[in-house]
Image 1 (tube, rainbow, N blue to C red):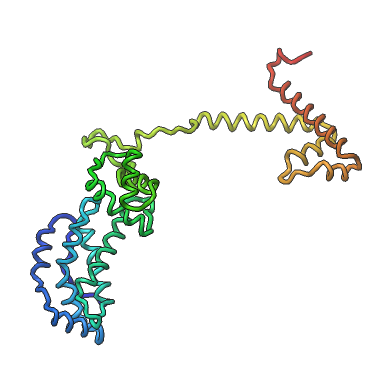
Image 2: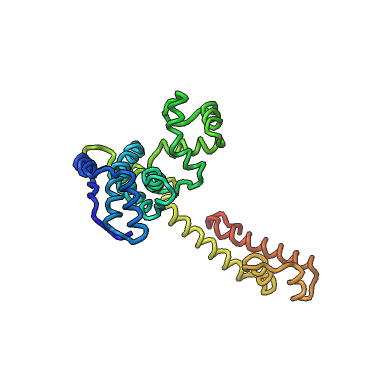
Length: 296
């Protein structure tokens, strides 16, 4: 739709002034609405579209106010609703005999609810009809059933809600948890006292190993690899090759394949492999023992 000027929605506060502005636009009669809609639809009359939009801005505000309580600024809800209104005006077919308000309210609600779903969490909310129904109806149904909105649902409450809304209990429990906790920035202050400067990320505990432990593990692993390498270098060439092909290769060879290479039986390859492993284990064990513990 061609851009035209409508009252700007204030970013923060100042909504009362915005409401006074939009309430100043006249409500169109059915005849006026039909005339403007025909002019816009058939000849692209921007002025006619402007009248259609501005006369329904109060409808957007009314619908947006009904979605307070989801942690999204009302000004943002109104802005998204206005976008939905403009889409409705663009697609409105006056020949069908309906009033624009009846048609536009669905576009306005769709724009607002989609924005709330996008804004609620960094984790994408479900877009299925049942999930949207749960998101926007769960709190209302809980109030109707006198279920206190205090966190986790009991099995009996989840069953009652699922039966009332005709959805699975698991869906009710999951959505209730999503509604109970909002995303929190790791940089959010833990105290209102700005001088303290502590943020939530400062209180997080890393359950993983410490850098010192990781360094020690890397050094230990490197040391053991060196011992194994040195031990294998003491083996006869055939045993070293069999051990390398069976234990160190990306695609280990079978006993039959190695038997074919050396012209020996599968069982003989197995025996050589076992003997080589035993030699390597003993060599590594001896290298790890303190000097005084090494057998004479």
